Length: 120
Image 1 (cartoon, rainbow, N blue to C red):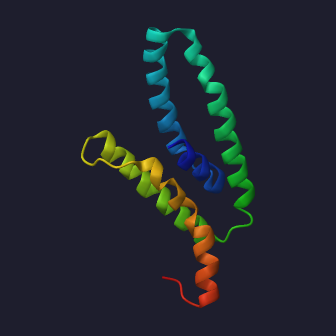
Image 2 (image 1 turned 60 degrees about the horizontal axis):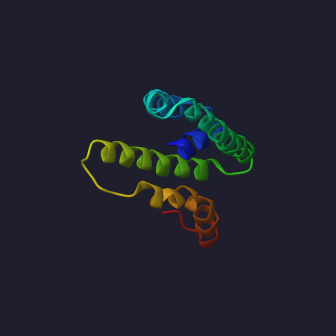
């Protein structure tokens, strides 16, 4: 959700996925801090850095990438968020992190499809 939410925030300014993730992380960090101590708070520093860098990069790429590419990347990200929810409910058993490269496939697919003259 961190990667998908950061990309969404950078491309479209939609922060809902990041807000949902921060709520989940906040509750979890309170429970972990009670068990492990105040050091849990320091885990927010690298999280802030990599989410911020992904958001800034996506914001810069949003001016370069075509709208179709951004739409397909957002659709792939939405499916991954759905898979995360289904996994949390115990409905499916899938390693969602292995599917993260699917978000970036449209970057190569859209130019290739345009070059071949078909967009499927």
